[in-house]
Length: 283
Image (cartoon, rainbow, N blue to C red):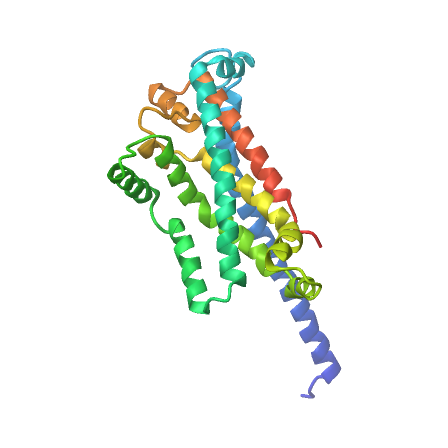
């Protein structure tokens, strides 16, 4: 039996390879589409259900609704405790976001641009990253014990310290990723033109870092605004935030009022996070 011509064999191999690639692409594409769809269902269906129930005319909602109303959203804004909790959460979030971004900038500069030995810079990065690996309840317990030793007790100062500890690694590594992409030649050119270190940092580095800094502020605010566990352990009776108010209502039972308050918190957090995610470094 004669061997097949090499051209025929090559064409057969090429056809088989093309078929294999198409099958692999189809399987991979279908798998990832299904995964994305299931993830979206898992994440967003509960949110949709809460938003749907918040429109119920009854205080104890049921499915299906027997009407639609927005009066529970108005009730949230006329409830003194929820308004106070919203104002407190916003104030704590702003302070935490600004302070966390400032400290994150200093840490990022140390990690990326300092003349310290490499192992020291890696050590700084590891210390900053510790809150990502330490359970939140342990963080809250440690800060509470330290605050007690210092005579601060429970209240606003320990809550701010806990929130700052929590957001610092996010701010640091967000700014670090942008810092590492900057061209060192720009700083050297500014120094050759007679600018000192502070002038270079203020007129060259900071403008290039501005998108990352703004994104850091927004992300840190979102993290602080929604933080519950640290606040729960450290607030005492003198600090009331929106997550704590929602938790207090949850213990009573799911109501349309609670659903409306939860939707408002989700909208605020989602809006801020979306703005932060939309920020892109300049090209």
